[in-house]
Image 1: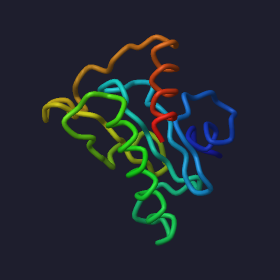
Image 2 (image 1 turned 120 degrees about the vertical axis):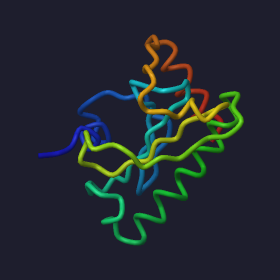
Image 3 (image 1 turned 30 degrees about the vertical axis):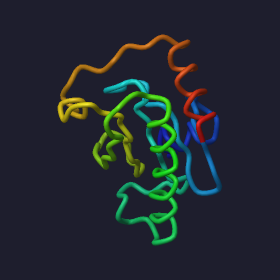
Length: 130
């Protein structure tokens, strides 16, 4: 059975897409820690990021770097952090989170509640910054 991320990539579940290429897909986290919190996933469905073949692993990280620079252009922050964390979805993914303090990337923090319009505006701005 396809993961929720594969269903997002295939357009079966809507998302706030930021970018995509041959290997990867980036979209806004719908339960973000901060505005601009993006998930970057390989199109190849693999549970553990370290089980990706070398080319897919490389492409995922290079794509994440481009997306992180775009986030930094749009969301005022000291840094965009990169995290490989989570067991809920059996599909490798990288969280990109703009932060101003270390506490901004604490996954036990309350998640933001954003409107559809806010999500759309953020996704559009990051996408344009690419």
